[in-house]
Length: 147
Image (cartoon, rainbow, N blue to C red):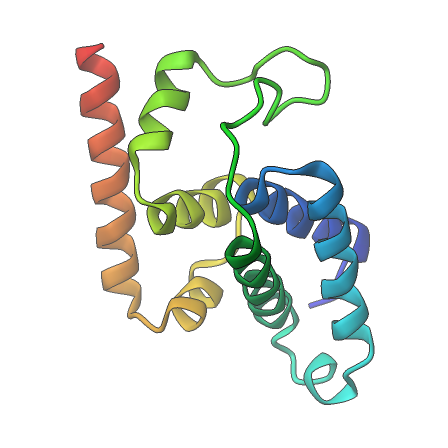
């Protein structure tokens, strides 16, 4: 599998921004993620690039999260044009999810990270991952249909 660095860079940035909720900090963490990946021949050549990139980004975001308190999500979180791309109801329901469930949705639905990579990243079976995703999506569907 050939790695499209630009595409992965955008996905890692989106993941970092989702976790940190600060554009400049997300840019810094994304850059640090790729610098660490590029400086490590051992991991770069193992064929598990995507998993390794998300592991680095996840750890760096966790380090930053311990250093700061989060502010509420900005209105333009998902759109650079200034027009919110998520309905207010969906945004509210996403905020009610646990941080781990929001992260899983971002990785799988928005960034389209392969299930196999997610299973290794979270240390769970495919069955467990699919069950968790179905549960999250069912919860969101029920909450939004009732709104």
